[in-house]
Amino acid sequence: MKNVFLFLEKYFAYLFVHFCGLFWQIKTVNRPKNQKVIYIFWHQNMLPLLYLHRGENIAILASASKDGELIAGPAKLFGYKTARGSSGRHGISATKKLVKLSKENSLAITPDGPKGPAQILKIGALFVAYSTQLPIVPVCVKISKKTIFKTWDKFQLPHLFSKIKIEYGEPIFIKSKDEFTIQKNKIEKILNS
Image 1 (cartoon, helix red, strand yellow):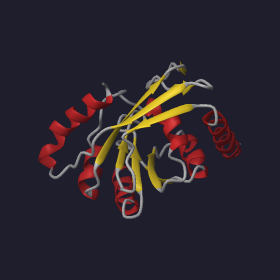
Image 2: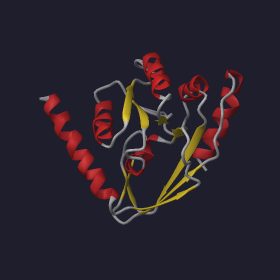
Image 3: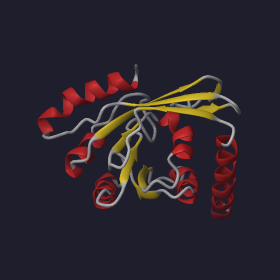
Image 4: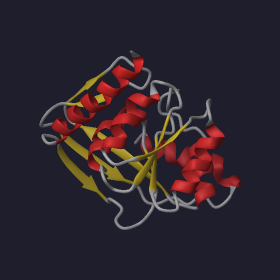
């Protein structure tokens, strides 16, 4: 029965986000073009980004749990590749898969997922950037009208006709493990600004 639910949820979520996306008024600032990067953004902001970047040769990190399938299923229908894992489960194998996928794809990571704490960057995202030598691009999302759910991340659902501003930070390269702490603080500050 669980498999039937996941199958139906995948298509329902895909159609729902696609329908909403048709009515969102998205404006982007400083969006990267023609380069492979690692997009980093908070878990609460994934819906408009899922819609905006569909079909763009991007691989995402999704939790290895059954809850992760709620994201991975619709994401695949939007054209994303997926690596399953997190800081707690299958983290090493997921990192290896992301490194492999990075040879032909940009990556997208929610560094406070899958269960928080919210808006605190986990070091794994920096390790992926160091391992792939792709630049991190912090992504900030501002939504004019939205519903905020009572979840650990305060997940945001933009209303129809909502104005959504998506701003991309300057690329940040992680050249050594010694930079992890200072770059972690820098990226958190950008994402929380």
